Image (cartoon, rainbow, N blue to C red; front, side, top):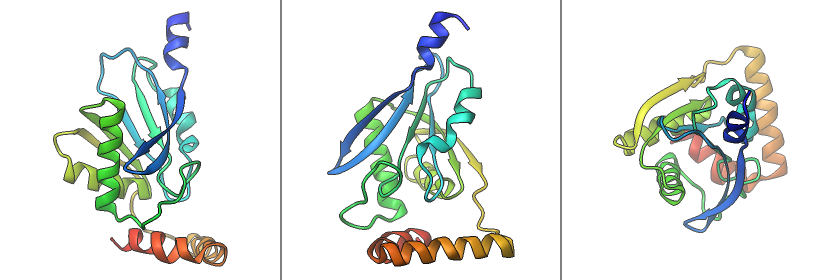
Length: 170
């Protein structure tokens, strides 16, 4: 790999504030010739969940990833969000970062958010890519999901009742 490719691949992480909400954002710079790719991670996942995928992408492609409020290093919101307000937050994040249009890839729950963003901001979403967005769980997966919910509920009932369930049901 030449030094230009290596330089283009160095991700830049930052904390930004959008409408009073702090978000951790990481951008792997590209060469500016392609539409940037915005990654939306699944419920409970940090933006690092995409790192091995990002490493395999063309180094000239700019890649934006972020921790949804309450996940990873983005603090929980003061007021619970619904998908519509999260999509608005994503659009405002893109405005602050200077992106007019992106391709969007949503993984798992991030696919729900990606669909909402594409619906609300169709002119900003050039392409929508969905990965594993269905809630089709096997019995074993359901038991793991139930244990995860139980732990969240016990640890932080405000988060569970005020954020997780309204977002899941929206």
